[in-house]
Length: 605
Image: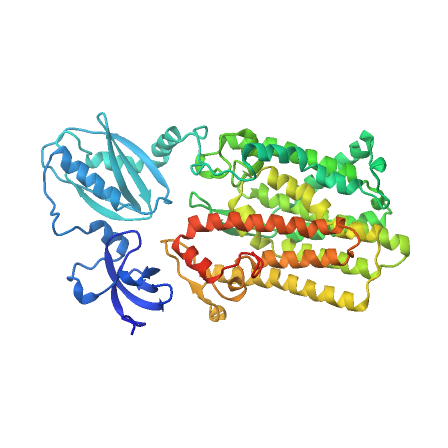
């Protein structure tokens, strides 16, 4: 028989403390040994069943408005407040204030004030509005008071007779916050101070690994683009003109400026992105559909005026895009040198220029308040992929005077994927793993400007050079795979978007979710698409990639590089995302992983 049932009034232990507060049982998971409880301040959390007590076992105390405030004011009965003026008394109060501090994620600032001798046993009440005293540190006649935001408290401090903060000084400290405190913070934590990679965990093989990737990654697209229908080693281009020409460089530069101009124009609307590590929510301009319309219009104009667009050489284009990636990495890395520490990438701040520039040292580099460089890079990358697909379709049409079923299947599905994945659903991009959690480095530049357009369009290009006659049953099977893949991508994204906006939307009442186990955390979906695997959108992308390669046949390994690459990329990203989510959600993520065991591919990974 269960000790507790739904709706019971209990005393529940507040996570991260030793104190109990009134709560109501909302859900019970006897298997995992947890109960979802609603505290009196409106916070819902998971609490271990062994930390639920009957109300009768506790003496009635003064009721407070929230567990957080009560936790700061409560005292053990054996520790009565004294008015001792000894140094030990002040230190004990300092430790008590430090113990009652909230999450370390809250933004902190440091203010230093001079201390004046006062009369012994004189009592000062320091009232802070939307701030909280975290701890007091005494250093040679000065006292540092570290404050963190979001809480309103009143503390009575009985200081040492030799060390005391006057009421006037406290008032001046708050009044001069904008001018003085931020200056103190910059002095304490200058952008050039040693950073932030406290875990010392390196990805991609560390410094040597990323150095090797710097040298070898550009060879991938160049190798595939140099491959021809009857390719032999002796036929690989060896002249510099085959890999580089000024016209290709000019085309790449104009394409980048074209999409930068559209992004800078006041089209579309602005949304709030996810919270950054320093607690801010950045604004993002959503106007990718305008980029799509202008891209189609520009291509149509070139076609109408008979510009020889199909004669553009892809190999020098890829070289120019690669050079643009290296130049962009250098400029963004130099820009990050003047960026505050709380805006840097904690996983790309090792102190090694090679490693940090590869992962990106700055999390959200911007030009002005709305031109986000990471979100911008998606536009020329996805638009270039779209243009290359249309070029290959035009080549096949001009050669045969009609579209083959194979090219129609591949070309139309890739164009539809590009539109659905980014242009139509750009509002979800700020919440994607790479934009939300990764810095802007070589991974982003080379991935968006080179890998996406020249590697992702590989199946269509291969089909033009190696046409395959598809049977009706094959076409039907491939269409079914594409529908499943597109459904996973679009519907899981829409489900997550609706849940993020309002977890308690009546339209989502059929979904089960986990409450946060940390104050300020997010609820986690454990049913629907997100109850199948932890990344159903990744699974959809793999299914779509498999369908594209299958449409090219199995006579050559080249068109199968795309799904192999995507599987490796997304599985690696899922592992990295698990680490970030474990740090962010704590116990709730552990429970979620027990419920949803597979990351991307059911029963495999």
